[in-house]
Image (cartoon, rainbow, N blue to C red; front, side, top):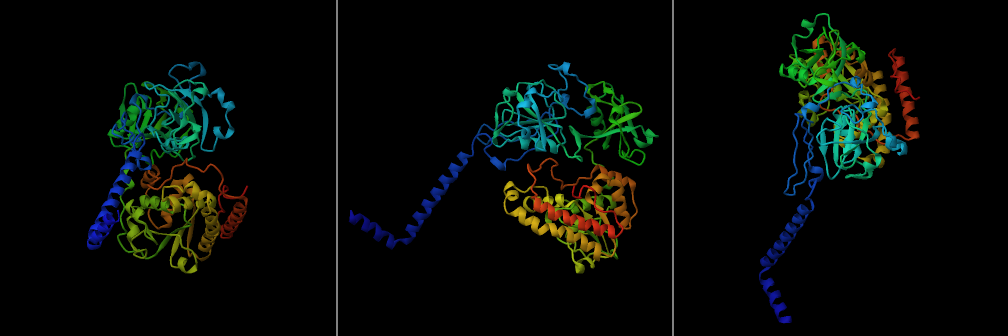
Amino acid sequence: MAKPLLKIQRYFRRKPVRFFTLILLYLTAGSLVFLHAGFVGDGGPGGRGGRDAIVASETGGHTASSDSRGLGIMRVFKEAHRSGRGYAPMWKKKTSMSTEGKDGDYSHNWNRALKARNAKDIDDGRAKYIGCYVDDTHKRALKGVSFLDYKKMTAFRCQDNCAERGYMYAGLEFGAECYCGHKIQAANASESECNMECKGEKSNMCGGANRLSIYRLELSHESARRYGSAIFKGCFHRPDNVTLALPFSVSIQNMSVDKCVDTCTEKEKSLAVLAGDRCHCGFPTPFFSLHEPEDEGMCLHRCLGEEFESCGNDEYFVVYQTQVQDNRCMDRHFLPTRANQLVALASFPGAGNTWARHLIELATGFYTGSYYFDGSLYNKGFKGERDHWRSGRTICIKTHESGKKEIETFDSGILMIRNPYKALMAEFNRKYGGHIGFASQAHWKGKEWPEFVKNYAPWWASHTLDWLHYGKKVHVVHFEVLKRDLFAQLKRMVQFLGLRVSEERLLCVEGQKDGNFKRSGLRKLEYDPYTPEMRADINELIRAVDAALRKRNMPGVPGEYMPR
């Protein structure tokens, strides 16, 4: 036995290269086996896991099938059949309880089994559970977009995706299917029939076989009410000169919202306006600004082509915004001549600086600059991001800096202030999730959040106080007020920058106010991340900022900032 081993030893002593070659071959073979096992383990439904892309489609009737070769089921949004598209606003619902079992609106038909559910399950701050409903593959209860995920579906994920698209209801079926809609067109089912656990959350039920667990979404106030590809803008009184305000008009037989929206989209107009059997198309103008909405009940007039929709009448128009881009405010350039003064757009991080830049660029037609450089912002169209902040080619310069030396560098500044409770959470999400992402639960519940609040909350106050003290000429803008009254506030900002105000550009901005960096309005924490100690400290900081503003004869912080 010893002789063969001795021969092998002598062989490798003479040939060390062969020894290392054998080792390399062995390791290569092991790696291939490991990779093969990994691919096999990823097979089956949803096998690509987190790397699967959600492919959005709102063109009607497009679906995606499973790949039978083990590549997994692609999660795909699809628009329901066009005949089922629901554009009508909420005030169109008149179906009584006696219509149960027919094709009607069951949105308010609450399931009796709710009494047995835990209060936390019914209302968690994001959505309210309203019951188990019948679903039919040929006649869907919720006729908006839908998507599937046979591996990671949760109730929250479904709610979040439906809310992001402006739908009022989210329903889950078969433990893995999510459906969105503006009204429920099906009857109640027994709560025991919604008995399938969510694929990504075993502790919660996600419908059953042809049964939907439906939630009514608590959309944020500013969330758009979407109906298919259009956004409901409201009910408005007939303008004095319809021809001047809405230059294109056509009479349509069996009028429906769908038909008018399609007509105006083809005409490349951003507004679809319904007035009985007439469809008007145009853009927001001073003649029809959409600034004075009427009570929606004034537009209650059933469409001839769709019983669940309202088409307005001769005096009160129903208005929708199409997917056509209003290009009147899209042209942007660098300043034609070097600016004599440096104007800051100053804010604490998370206070809406990027959003304000988007609004200012559209309203003025000039690029904004930055004290820093962010490649993701440059790639999204903020071309002034690459310029040196002293170049003088941009209308104003983003900065989060504070302190006497930094502030006195600027000749004037627009100071953005946001509720610190909101600003701190927004910046924490950006820091750990990117511009439109979210921090993970591990970050919120770990040591990162308390440490972040400890360091950043005092900065929120000191930043504002420094700018009020050292700023040569400061125009204060509160984030919340800008959202509520965008036209008037943005007009004042443009005037502060020394530019002529174009009302048509401002009206154009209102239709494209969100920009590319808006987070979903629904994704909220399931608990309050602020401890009583944190709140006590932040409330003191709010009082200090409020006092400093009033000392300079400015309005104090908005009421929602102040401790209750």
